[in-house]
Image 1 (cartoon, rainbow, N blue to C red):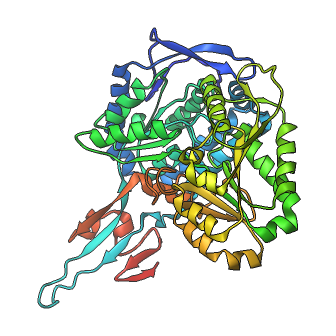
Image 2 (cartoon, rainbow, N blue to C red):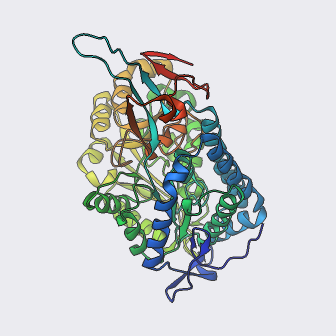
Length: 524
């Protein structure tokens, strides 16, 4: 398919105007701008996209699930058909290797197809039927049925660190479209060319599958105003966001201040604490060092699941020395944007003034948005007395915290904010001794990992990629896995409706052959 970039927004089946306000992507390796220029959407185009979405919501929301499944598969096919052009553009705009985007493209298309499979099977709607009992005493029982229905048009904000999997056709878009919701995407300035290519693939699928025009639009913007206007628009009924805590909170506040408040599903910040317990340290400390180094520096430390806090036994000199040596030997690498680079360097300087030990690669002749990896070290007492050490630093760095006491670790675990993940390295003996630690961590995170590392999120139905605030805005939700569809749907109850007026999923004949709860019994 065509891969020529125009730098203009996609408004339904039309292209946006070439406004005077423009921006460009950057090559993080050199810091140089990349052509072409991208034109920020006008406020009138926000309204046009939202109006089209509102017009499309009933038709698209009432399509049978199998038609939406075909549409999702067509998007996946079109993204794959972009071929090397997509991989090369994503690599150019991020300075991450091509291999990274071959994998990320597979994940993105896999997400779309998993939701398509979910729609084909159909039971996701959680259909429940309670038949009437007209002769019940003292009050007759009505016929009551309920199921999940689409919430309405959704605004999706692309993430800087996942140009494919958390962007234009990523998890938020896939789950919203699967639920039956039109989607308006706000592209990220870090990878606008990648966004346009994928946006064209989605638009092509809309036409191929003869879907309503307004179910997809893509807006470019050099600042925050367009995204804020999108969240304020009365046609928008939900928001998906992956990014900073500051950005997520801003959108949450805007959504809450609307005359009609709407839900914001924001993934915002996480330090993903890692606990290395004593026996595991003795038995396989060297292997844990290698895995930790790969997890901290992978993707230049720009994963939301990077281990930012690592708790080790007090007698861990060899482990810490080995880890510090590996960090010191790691080459500098570019971060995604100049803004992320500046924030990383400022945060590192601040942390160096708070803790007793730090080490970084000594390379100083850096180009573009490159930074040095670093590691900091402190004690449990210092950690508990310095609240700033809980804050996420986005980039290739972590903080090692020594603790000699069981109760100290429990106190630290209780003090932690909500997180996406927590990892525990331990033997069977460790797990018995620290069972109370596991119970505390379960209340703090969305995913607990044993003898592994937090980076790498498996896209599968049982995955939970969420967690208590501030990891996410709603700890009951997930951004990965098929449960993500529930964020963009709501329950609707139908009382005393005749069979032919009910959705197919709620009719007695169950022609769709889906699992349902009927009069309290789970059955087909």
